[in-house]
Length: 153
Ligand code: UDP
Ligand code: MG
Image (cartoon, rainbow, N blue to C red; front, side, top):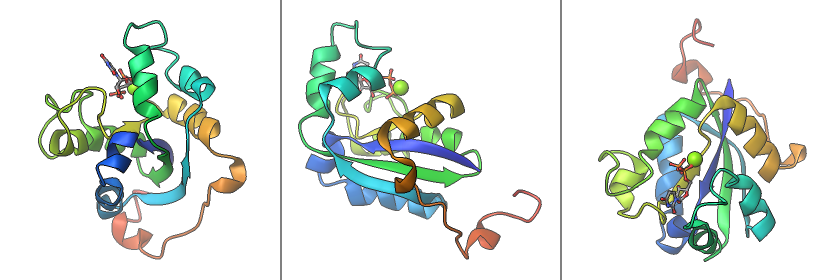
């Protein structure tokens, strides 16, 4: 099964939406296999947003990610990367579909509640960036038999 990385951004923490966002992943049937609170250094943000470091908005983006600690999560499920991206919605909250996390909880394109890995390859890199191997808990859920049919897993 796939693993993906989610960050509850300061916009989630400061607006009191950590529980709401976690609830949505749990309700969907994704398993939380890693979760911790941390502050994000300039270094880790430059690495994590390396595709954006040269953009004029990068200093503002970095500041937005340092307004409070964040919660980083690793969630697991069948095709979890695609599922979590769909649940996250488009980058700009005001354009994101209603029903998605961003579409339901924010207006901003920067203070947009969550980060979610955009490919299986990047998910692996990002999980390694934020978690030590011993911080990922690959336990079994007794509910797996109800979440997936036998021929799906
Ligand atoms: N971002 C921003 N201004 C922009 C584009 C992106 O502040 O014009 C921020 C926003 O917080 C976004 C993050 O940079 O979530 C990463 O951008 P990306 O294009 O990877 O979007 P995402 O994958 O988060 O939807
Ligand atoms: Mg992205």
